[in-house]
Structures are given as structure tokens and as C-alpha cells.
Length: 405
Image (cartoon, rainbow, N blue to C red; front, side, top):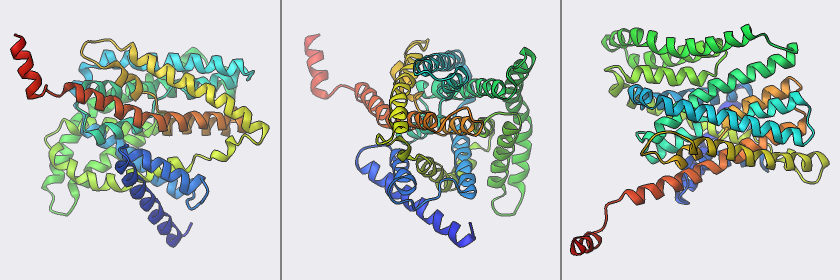
């Protein structure tokens, strides 16, 4: 794609994002829902204006996902996340085990080979923190305890899900994996997360202090973004999702004295790239593969519907088992539902390795679509209900209470 064509594509992406988000807000829905549906219509719907599989646009969308998680990390309190650690870990494990078992069971009932059924179960495990984080941010509830539990759990089950995916992919390539190799993957994941936070805290503060003393324009913002990209690259090299490194980078910088000046500097860049991510994720969803006019389409629709049901049930039940007091467990369960870009990554890898047939790939795609679309309105409705319940009683109500006393 040449530069003029790329620029035209970016104009379309940004126009679709802003028009879609504006329409969604006017309808009382989260802006992210408008961006997703706008991408579906422009790329994979009737118009085919966008090129969802273009390498350059895909790279820009990935940068958007990285900046989204970096921004969420900047707005999070690591100490608070650690305090809800056990609850988040419980939700993460439950949110992996239940969807994996239910997904494997449904795939086996539909007569899929064992390896394909295992891969389908693995594709249902990881939560797309990007969708939920955007809804939490739009509604201004990132400081709620439920939000911190979900963000911590989403990162944890992303790591667990990628470990499971590595095991399944190894089974496809080699036939088996030794316990030593599995332990090595697990060790790398935990070593990266702990090491990036501990070592990053020692390196980030001096780097940002030096950047603030420099006279050239934009040095502080460039240093913060470079730190984010560096940890994202290290996460990818360690076999983890780059967004895990971006979130860790945000957590580290949030504990420095430079957090306040960094946040407003990063937001314009995030506002440019994050909509690209959501629009392109919608554009990559091709609904034509689920056409009921063909046998493969009907089979994919049936399997996709069954998998979508167990995908939602598995995450919600995991959230409902969250330990602790003063927590709305429905918020936790609903927020863990979306698979989003993580599910798309899993599905794409399964198709590349020949584990998923076209119809099975379409079924997994349907799960990603349904889980992504149902979460924002359901989560917004639940949070608004909690907000209404928390409002103080009216003057008349308080007067009646006093009279009764």
C-alpha cells in the first residue's frame, strides 16, 4: 500500500471511529460499541471500504492496543492492584478453567477431533482487557474495586491462556511437550511480570528525571512511550502478548513523580491510535462466513451459538465466585466476558497451524463477535444500576425516615 492510499485508509478509519462513537453515545451506548460496529460495516460488511488484513493498518491497530493498556496502567494504582491480588487471581483461574472445560465439552459433543476441541477450549480462556478497560474508562469507574479486580484478573488469565495456547500449539507441532518445557514457559511469564515491575521501577524514575531536564520538545512524552514500547517488545520476545508489557509499563510509571505530567501528554496519542484498533478489530470480522445458505455456514452458526453461550456462562460464573466483601460480582463476571483481539489472535493462529477448519474458525470468530458486542451495554447497564442505588435518598425520603424514627 502506497502512502496516498494509506492516508486515505486512515481518513476512513478515523471518520468511521468518530461517527460510530458519536452515534453510540447519542443512543446511550459506550463509544467502543460504535467503533466496533462501524468497523464491521466499513470493512467486512456491505461496503468493503477498509482493508482489515493490510499489514500497515494491522500494525497501527496493534499500537493502539498497546497505548490503551499503557494508559490503563497509568491510571491504575499498583498497590491497590496488589491488595486485590488474591481475588483477581481467583477470578482469573476460574475464568480460565470453566470456559476451557465447557468449550472443550461442546466441541467434543459436535464431534471435533481432540486437538481441535482442545484448541477451541483454549481460545475461550483469555479475556480481552481492552474492551472492558475502555468501558470502565468511558464511565469513569476505573477506581472501583471491581475494576481493579477485573484488570488484574484479565492480565493474569491472558498469561495463563497464552501458556495453555503454547501447550496446545506444541501438541500440534511436536505431538507432546515435556513437563520441563511447560514449566519453562510458566517461569518465563512470571519472571517477566515480576522482573519488569521491580527492575522497571529502578530504571524509570532516573530516565524520566533526565528527560524532564532536557530542553528539546516532547522529550518526556517520547521517553514514556519508548519505555512502554520497550516493555511491550520484551513481552513479545518472552512469548507473551505485547499488551501485558504495556500494562506493566503503565503500572511502573504510575508510581513515579512524573505520572501527573505524563498522562495529558499521552492522551492525544492514545486518542488517535486506540480508535484505529477497535475499528480494525470490527473490520476483521467477516459475517459472510456464517451464512445459513451453505452447509458449512449452518454448522458454524450452530457451533458458534453453543460456544458463545458457554463462553459467557464460564466467565460470569467465574466472576460470581469472586471472594471478598463489598464487591458486585455481576460486574466482575460481565466484565470478564469479551475475548476481542485475544480471541482473534487465538483463532488466527489455529487457522495458520491447520487446527481450525474454515467453518470452525468462523465459529470461534462468532464467539469473539458476540462476547465483544454484548459486554459494553450489559456492563454499562449494571454499573448504572449500581450508581443509581448508591445515590443518597431524596429529601422527601429522608423526611419520611426521620418521621418514622
